[in-house]
Length: 84
Image (cartoon, rainbow, N blue to C red; front, side, top):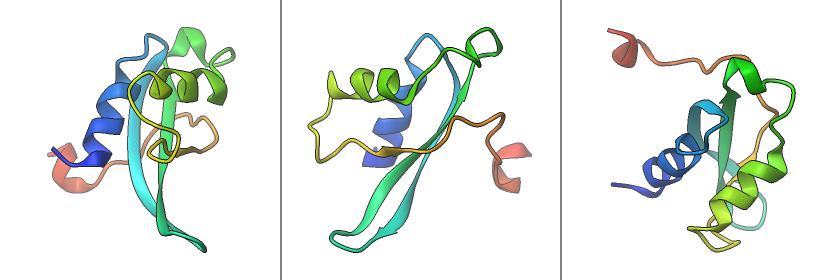
């Protein structure tokens, strides 16, 4: 299992999270960094924070491994290979 999958699995284990995807994005210092895209469960769409997700990740990963957290999303786009 690669790091992105591990990060996604831990984020998905958060009780307020419906979906998560971790992607690599360019970074000026480290070439690239993981970015977490997170969709809250409908009941928590207004009260899940980036800080909660980050704190949840810090129980399993060190600060350097934790992804940046994108804005909380309404849905995650999936590639066609996942939808089929």
